[in-house]
Length: 274
Image 1 (tube, one colour):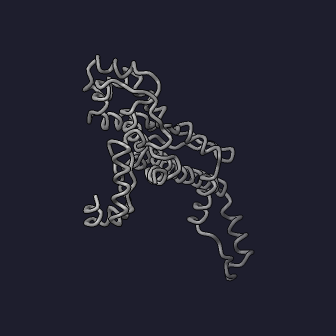
Image 2 (cartoon, one colour; image 1 turned 135 degrees about the vertical axis):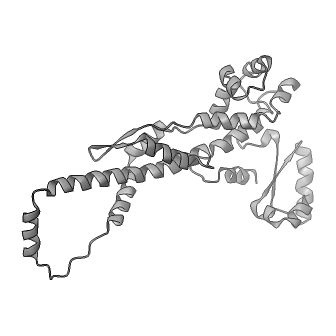
Image 3 (cartoon, helix red, strand yellow; image 1 turned 45 degrees about the vertical axis):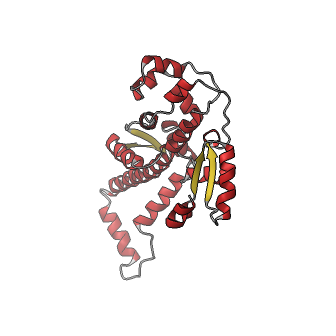
């Protein structure tokens, strides 16, 4: 480890997690690395991989082997992907008026938001795009209404403009972009819009999501088809508390979900371990 940290300095800048087989092994590592001048390392066992999550029971070697297979990472990825909302037309209320955002526009925003992001980071990115879409719809409706009101009044407006004098220097006015940006900010701060997004794209708790997955024969059969019927039954029939083999799965699903407010959720885990 000391050699790797010395040779690849970027590893030290990002911090390195050492996953050890036992607390005794990690105690040895914690004494050796600082003596070599390496302090950019945090350590954990599988049981302590996720902060504030404790192992509450032992389990059979058979179950440990089943949940230690490589199939779980893609299974969890597909499961979390299935929790994402599907594109549909949205009817949003703003200042007493309803505005429609078409399913195609919602689908494009959804595809853009989910590209390379965790579940919760994608939700935040989608909310930002939705604010832009709604601001555009509001501005477009206002422009159409103003154009309709102006029809038939060209002569009146022309006389008003003439009476005000065309030679006078016009007062500075804000651009359309500035007004649109202000509208977006107001929409982003609106509690009603936030509640709409939360209802359509709810936050997910990693523990709840994993329990729902591991306790459902249907979900396991759909997303982990490599498991036999007997193996599915063994997993589903497990008691409530977490076993040691559940912790890596919980860590994986927490990363896929991401933190609801921190763009780098794993940084919080590392800080707590340190």
